[in-house]
Length: 319
Image (cartoon, rainbow, N blue to C red; front, side, top):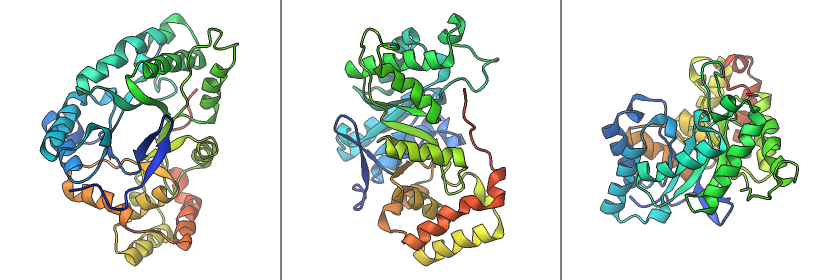
């Protein structure tokens, strides 16, 4: 299949563009079996999708790369049409470790370059159970973020990736990286890449801190990528919220999932729903084919006021 007719792309630094609908390669059985990963990536690219979102933590780089290469061979897809994202896990933060490990991603994926590499989180989720080069040297999380960013910026200059971004960052974490523009925190005036993307949990039920992060990114030219586009909401929302979703879905002859994805797309957000099912891949790419009205968007924006939404799990800001 060709690329979707109404495909939307968002601009990134260095004259790059990122497709607004991607394929998440995490958090389901088919994302951890090499053969299923290979087939999933192959099916998605042959269905017209052009954005694959992975991570070193998911241990599926080699299978993703194999699927990409096979799709390029079968359908004559140019490499520059395929947008590949991966992430550096917190265990591997630190200037020297980052410089050592990240080039190995190219070997694992068997690619000449990666489009986007993200810092997977601002710090360890379980600091007492995990360590990295930074914790062993006794430096703060803020210092660790800064030196890791400098290492990624240098790798970008060397051509390992086109752009650099972050994941699960909130407003206070951006300020740590912005400090690298000052002599106090970057006395050698090393290159500092712009923050291209922030990937975090964002959907119509998002709490205030997530909305604040979204607004900050929009104001500062940082593309938002959303995971958990329904946030597991269907098992927990009130009947009135469910009625809102069902009525908008019926109005557009789509699924509720497509409505949630389209809501994000119209907010200039990238979405990365994960599936190994070709039918669902086509449905997800189908969100380019319809538009929500202003009334629809307002009704969906109002879902975050659902009292039940406050009980959903969200990734709280880390130190």
